[in-house]
Length: 84
Image (cartoon, rainbow, N blue to C red; front, side):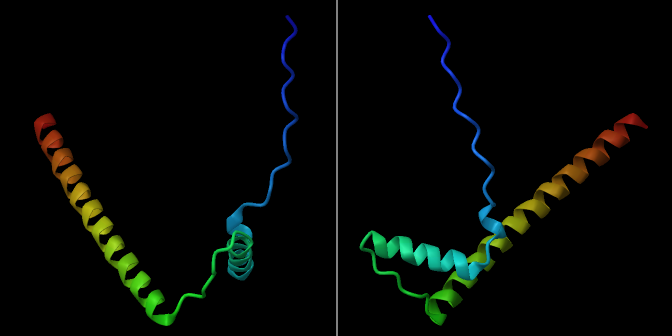
């Protein structure tokens, strides 16, 4: 039985993060409109709500990281005291 041939490798595309936000926004709106979905620009109030939600989420993550760091510090201290 012959072996299956591998598909040729595709050339690397530019990562999305390298595109300007305006280009990404226009592409997203075009895609939505092509699928019959109304693309509305975010209002200042929606941006403010999203920003506050993001801020709250980041605060929670930072608190969790600080708690984990404190726990790790105490574990290291206990291990070092056992060595001595």
